[in-house]
Structures are given as structure tokens and as C-alpha cells.
Length: 441
Image 1: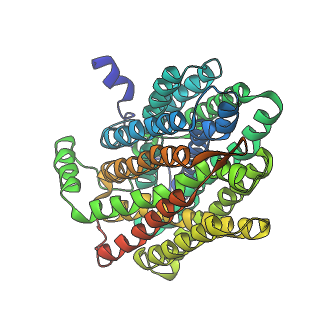
Image 2: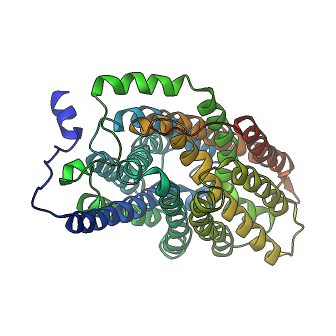
């Protein structure tokens, strides 16, 4: 255990170089902060490739009778439950850790698991390995977000957080285009193997360019250093903060809709609208691409237009999110252009909401030295919601499955109500934290 703690221990602090003048310090800060921001953003994007790989393989796995819809729901739920618990635990641990080592290690193991899945065809092995993947995936978001707290101040964090949030969509778009292409030509096994390759690339990127803290590079800290014994008390105050828990449940319901489309959107389009795998993947990938612009826009909007306040834009885009999801699901067949338009609005609004509900609003209302704990609380609720979605969606889809003239037909009505209702509950909960105050610490 002692060796394990030393492996993840914070990087040693270096003294300030008295020979550097202000211009040299500013230049060094700018260079290293750029490296931290880009490596956290693209590194976490490649985390997502190793997390979403299974979603592209669902229909081939069902068609080859390797797994059923319910089994896929259970497997997907296993990842989300493990991820939820892991994000809570790792969110608290990362406040005391070297974020570079922490993040790189999680992605390395996740890539190995994806590689292994290319050689597995058993439900039990799929479920166990995918659950383990969920745990190690949870080592990605906390260090990424803590890096923004350690390297960027309150006035600029929203803008950078918005750009960073695009990492989700970069990973999703890469998965739904590149991985889908690999699966189409080489089969589902190579889909997992190619995802593993992307993960190993991310490990190299993190090890080369992510840095633990300004102090570890001989620079002055952005946030006021806190003694280790004080961190525990401050983390406890996060757990006692009711606004954090309301935000967590709002994020959880948003994640139901988010991962409903991410996990089952391709399957829905293939079975309900009769699209082939590549067309269905392309339509869903539109939401991922538009989400990038939502992420980027969100931080700038709240920092510049709303002067750091996130509640009003969170409510506005919550309503847009529910409306676009309803439009996408209830459209009659034959309106592909409208489906694409709905996915553009859905992806854009999800991009904004991921930035606000799933991270930035939580970081705003707690002391910055325990940002990881806040992300942990929101994370466990969000991914328990995503896990509940996956298993519930799988069951609802299989229950709606029946034979008509010897052909399998699906009834998606119950599923649609479940997804849309969750999106509505998410923006309603935002009203309960309308006047929450931002922490200046």
C-alpha cells in the first residue's frame, strides 16, 4: 500500500526560480498551461473512445447471437454503476494525487480491457470486463477537471472548461465515425482493438504533456494551498451541501437522455427507421460534433454574457434539450433532414449541459482545493442515472420486441416516454438551485 500511495503521490514542489523575471514567468505559464489544457482535453477524448466502443458493436453482437438486448443493457449498466462508484471514490482521491499519473494509469488499463474484449464472446466475461472498464474510466474526468482548477483562475475557468468539455464529443465523434468504419469492414472484434489503440495513444499524450500543479513546475500556485488535514474537513462540507446534491440529481436525469442516445440511438434508428449501420452512426455522430460547439459556447456564454452565472443558460438549454429529444423520437419516418436537425440541437444543448450540470456549476460552489470531491458527488449520481437508463432501456426494448409475419418488430413508445420524461425532470430541478452562491475560495 505504501508503494501504491507513493506511485500516485503528488509531484514534488519546486522552489520559485529567482532569476526569472515576470515576462519569463508569464511565458512559462502560458506554455505549460497550454500543454495541460490540450493534453487533458484530447486525453479525455481518447478515454471516451475506450468507453463508447461497445455502443457501435451492439447490433453485430445481437445479429451474431452473441448477446441479447437485455444482456447488452446489463453489460452497459455494469460499466455505469462501476463508473459512478469509481468517480465518487476517485474524485476524493485525486485531490491528494498526481493528476498525470492518475489519469494515464486509468486509460492504460482501460485500453488493455478493450483489447481483451476483441477475443471474448461470453456474456459473463463481457459483463466483468466492461464493469472493470467502468472503474478505470472513472479515473479520467476527476484529474482532468482538477487540472483546470489548479491551472486556471475563477475569471477564466468557465471559458476553458467549456473548451475542455468538447473532449466528450471529440471522443464520441471519433468512435461513431472511425470505430464504426472499422466494424463495418473488419468486424466487431477489430472495433475493440482499434479503440484500444486510441487509448494507448492517449496515455502517451498525457504522460508527455499533462503536469500536476504549477508548484511542481517551479511556478506560483493559482489556488491557495491547503494543508492535508484540512482537505478532509472541506470534502465533508461538500457532502453536506444540499445544492451539490440537487445539482447531482439534475445531472443524473440529463445523463439518462444523453446516454440513451449515445448507447441506443444507433440501434433505435436501425430498427425503428430501418437505416443501415453507417447511416445510423452518421446521424448520431452529428449530435457529438454539434456538442463540441455547445461545449465551447457554454463557457464563453456564462463567463462573458452572464458574468459567471450558469443557472439561466442551464435552464434555457435544458428546455431545448428535452424539446429536441422529443422531436427526434416522435418524428414520422422519411424525415432524415429533420432527424439530423434535431440531433444538432440535442447535441449542442447536451454539450452546454455537460459543461454546467456535470462539472462547472459544482466546481463553482465549493472551495477549489476540493474540486475533485464535488465532481465525485455529481459523478456518482450522473452515472447511476446513466446505468439505470441502460438497463431500463434494454429491458423496455426487449419487452417491445415481437414477431410480425416472421419478422422482428420493436415498439419503442415506452422507451420514448422514459427518455423524454428524464430530460424534463433535469431542467425542472435546475429551478431549485437558482440562487446558489459561488465560492470565492
